[in-house]
Length: 166
Image (cartoon, rainbow, N blue to C red; front, side):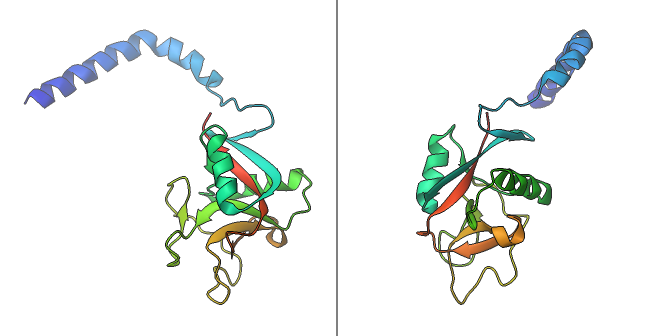
């Protein structure tokens, strides 16, 4: 009963607040665009940074964590994958592989994003992930226009994309 009363008080307070500030809220919404640091690119509510330095998967993820508390990029939708691919291509890089945050920490073919995001969207390249020459970290491949993933040895050194909230 007390929870219901509290809930009703909260709802009525919000209604009064929204009536009094409706005009103010409407004028603020267009300005709610994300602002990313110089040298990074915005997509939806995240900032992205392509780094051409060659690092192992762990060192690349640590770099991203130290940069605005981010992680290696998690690609959660096809549209986000297209954005990340265009970011890499626009850099003019000649690298063949670019690290993502996808990895298999227990080496049991159960993939996770280093950011903790759920793996609901998948974009594996043909024949990947491979059981023949299994790698436990995923990269974007230039042969797919950086849109498909391939499992690679985590000790390989590739360039990488960081993703972080600003």
